[in-house]
Image (tube, rainbow, N blue to C red):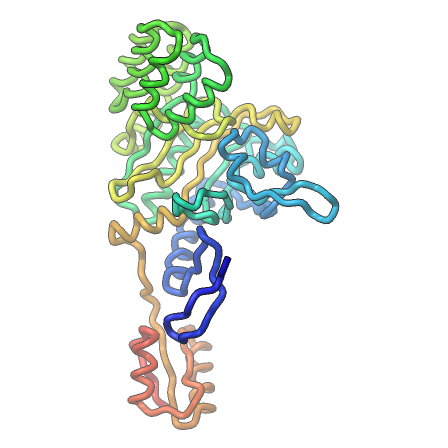
Length: 398
C-alpha cells in the first residue's frame, strides 16, 4: 500500500500519517494548552494532584475489568522480552494500579488527576481518532453519595471554568439495569450483547432482542420503561414504583442524596436523570454519568463509581472519577464561540541589518514581551508581508 501523499504547497511527495491520527498546528495547540491550564487549575483548587503513568503497560494490567469491547480496541505488541504490552486505552485502570502499588493505604482518600493521550483502535469506516487526549480525576478511598457529589461538582466546575456555557450532565446508576438483568433468565453472552446495545443507545435492537428472549411481558416492559426514563427527579419516583423492592430503594436514596448535595452547590440546572445510561466499561459499580452539549451529537466525557476495581490489584477501596475528551471539549468551545483564540501581543522586529533586529528582539523579550526577528535584511514592506502571514500586528523597525 502506498503511504505517501502529494504536498499541495511544495508539489513533492511526503509520508502520510496513519488513519485516525492528526497533526496539531500552533494556533490550535495554543488554545489546547490554555484549556489544559484551566482544567489543571480547577483540579488543583479541589486538592487534586497530578499523576503521570506510562504510555504503555502490560496488556494483562490494562485489560483488567476493561470489558470485551475495550480490550478489542487496545493496540497490543510484544517487547524484546516476549512480554505482551499495550498502549493505554483510558486512564482509570492505570491510576488504580498506581494507587494499589505505590501509595500508602493509611493516607486515603487520594485525590488525583491526569491529562494524557490515550489510544484505541477503531475500524476504518468509522473515521474516529485512534489517539486522543483526556483530562480527568480519580477520588480513591471515599465512598457514598457525598463523594459522588464531589466528583460530579468538579466535572461541572471544570466545564464551566473552561468556558463552556451550555452543557448538561446525565446521571444514572448501574444498579437499575443490572438488578433487572439478574432476575432474568439470560446467558452471560446475552447480557453482554444487551449491555452493548444499551450503551450504544440502540433501543430498536434492544426491543427486538428482548422480544426473542424467554422472559415475561411484564419484565420486558419494565426493562424498556427503565431504559427510557429521562428527566428530573420525578424519574426516580417512577422507577421506585416500577420496582418497589429494597434494592431499588437503596439506589434511589443514594441518588437523591447526591442530587441534593449538587442542588446546594447550585448545580441542579445542569442535571438530567437518565436511567438508560450504560457506560461501556465493566468496572463501574454505582452511579454513572455523561456530559452533553447541544453542539455535539456525542458525549464530551463521563465517569462513575468503581468500588471493585482496586481489588483486582489486591487493594480494597472505594473509588469514583471521570474523564473528559479534550478534543471534543475543544470542538464544543469553538462551536460556542469560547475557544479563547490568541490574545497575546506579539512583535516582529526588522532591520536592514538583521543583527540589529536580533538584538532588539532580545531586549523586548527581556521586558516580558513576545518578539521574533526577521533573519535577513528587511524593509517595512517585507516585514508587513511576513507579519501578515504570521498574524502579527506589532512591527518594530530598527
